[in-house]
Length: 629
Image (cartoon, rainbow, N blue to C red; front, side, top):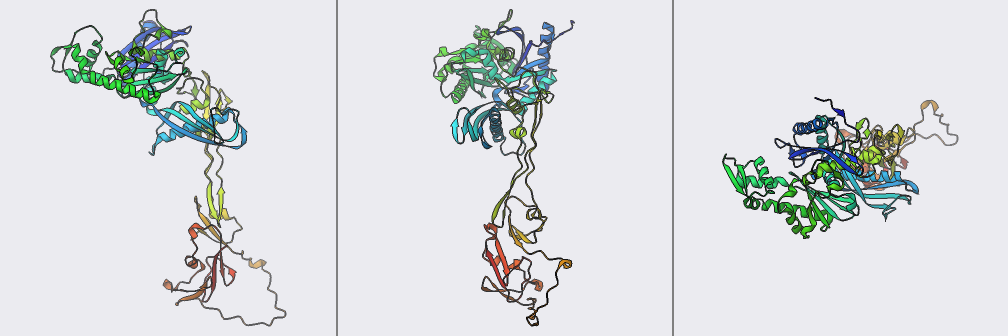
C-alpha cells in the first residue's frame, strides 16, 4: 500500500453527519470556486442519529472513519483536519438586555460596546438556563443587536457618541453544549481534528444560494431524514434560521405501515418513486415478494408529505412574516414527487418560484469527473465551500488556552465573540464587584461596598488584548477568567468600631459584637460613657461649703413583688417574673409603642433623666423614657 501524503493546508475535507448517512467531500479552492476532488457516502447500519443529534458516538465515529479511509485510499492523502456542521434542530434563540453604567460621561469606544454586547449575550444565556440548579452549557452561534440606547435615547450605532449610560438588546442563538460536544467527541474518536464548525442551514445556503443572490429575500429548505433546516436571506445576509421537526423519516414510516415492510425497504421504495417504473419490487416483513404500484405509494405518502409541506410553510412565515421571493428545496427529501408543488401552494406562491436546489452549485463548485448537482449534496458541499472559499471566518484554527476553539459565526471574529462561543460569560471577561451590604444604623441607611473584581487576563499571541480585538487564523489566545470581588461583610463590632461602649440591638434583638451582619439588618445603638479605669480616676474633691448629708436609703429591687414605675410619664405595673428575676430597661421596649422592626430614627433610653443602656436594672418608682430622637 502506498504511503499517504500529508493533508496540505488548502485541502478541504468536509463531513456531513446526517441522520441516515455520512457524506465526505474533499476539494481545494481554485480561483473563486471549489474544485471537488472526491465524494464518498456511507449509510448508518442502524439508527445512530436521532433527529440530527448524535445518539451513538462510537457508531458515528466508525462510519466517519470508513468514509475517511475510502477517500484517503483513492486520493493518497492522510486526512486529519475536518470541517463539520451542527444540525439546526437544537438551536435556541433568546432575547437579552444589558446596561453599562460608566463612571462619567464619555465617548463610547469599541471596547465599551464589546463589554455591553457581551453582557447582553450573557443575559440571554442566563434566561435560557431556567430555574434548574444544574447549569446547561450553551455555545453561542450568533447574535444580532436589536436596539442600542444611550442615556435612554434609542440609537442604531453607539460608536463615538457621548453619554454615561448605555444599553443593548440582542437576539442571540445558541446550541446546547451536548450537541457540540457529541460532534467533537465523534470526530476525536474518528482520529479527526475539527478545523471549523458551522450550522447545517448556513452551509446549505452557501452552496445553494451564492452571496450575489442574497440581496433577494430567499429561503433555503434542507430536508434531511430527521430534521428540516431552514435559512432565510435578505439584503445580502442571512437574517434567520429555524427548523421543522417533520422530515423524510415520516414519509418512510408511512410506507412501512402501508406495505408492511421494514425501514430499509421503505427507504428503497421511496427512492424508487422518482424513477419511471410503474411497479416497485419489494419483500414485506412476512417474507412475501410483492410488486407495489407507484400510484399506491404516492397515495400512501400524501398525508405525511402534506404535513411536511405545511410545517415548512409555517416555519418560513414565522421567521420571514411573509412568503419569500423564491424557495430552494435541498436534501434527499426534496426529491419527493409533488412536494415542491405542495410547498408553493401552502405559501401561496407561483410553483415556478419553488425549485430543487442544485442548479446554482456550479457557481461555487465544480468537478472534472463528478456530478455535483444533486440536492442531497447541498450540506456537505456547502460545508466544503464555506471553508474553502472563506465564506465563514470559522474555517480556520484558533487556539484558546492551547486547545482548538469552537467557532461558529460568519464575518469578522473578535476576542469577545470567541470567548462567548466557548462558554465564557460576561462575568468571566469583565468580573463582578462583590455585593454591597446595606444596613440601617440608628435610622440612617448605610451601604458598604463590595471589593472590586480581579481583572481577566486577555492575551493574543503573548500580548495584552482588548475584548474588541479582531482574531485571525492561527492566533493563540491565553485567557484567565476574571475573579469576582469579595462581598462586603462586617461584624457588629467592626461596624461600631473599637471606641463603641454600650449595647446594640440587631433587628430588635440584643446581639454580641462578634455577630456577622446580614443584608438589610437594622441596628439600634445605645451608647454609654466608657468607664474610667481605677488607676486613672481622679480623687473626688471634698465638699467645701455644703454640709455632709447622709445618703438616701437605697430603693430595693422588686424581688418577690410587682414593680411599679413610670414609662414616658404614664404609670406602669409589671408582674413578678419567674424565679423573681429583676427587670431591665430592654424589657420595657415592647411597652413603648415604637415599631423597632421598621425604625427610621434613633431611640434614646433614659432612666430618671440619665441615658442608660439595655442592661440597666430597673428599681421601684423609676421614671423611664423611651423616645425616638
